Image (tube, rainbow, N blue to C red):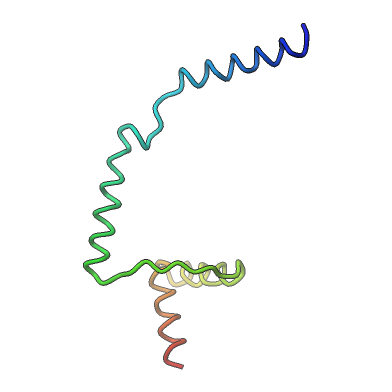
Amino acid sequence: MKKTDLEKLKGMKIDGRLKHASTPGRFGAAAATATNRREQRELERAQGLVPFAVKLDGELVKRVQAMAMERQIGLNEIVGELLLKGLRG
């Protein structure tokens, strides 16, 4: 068999797999999670919480995650506490 024939067969196999693949979760039954996220955002907004994205050094993030695990609290809570401490001092 020629190399081109092998490549055609590989392409046909891939095409067949794609045709028989199931519907991705974001379009099927799991699409309802988007509503849950929306509801979660509304609840957070009602609590006065605001999304705040920052870029931090990887080592710093690992230290903050370790602190959160050590104290058994979430990242949001530990970052909030650290920010308050930093702004006070």
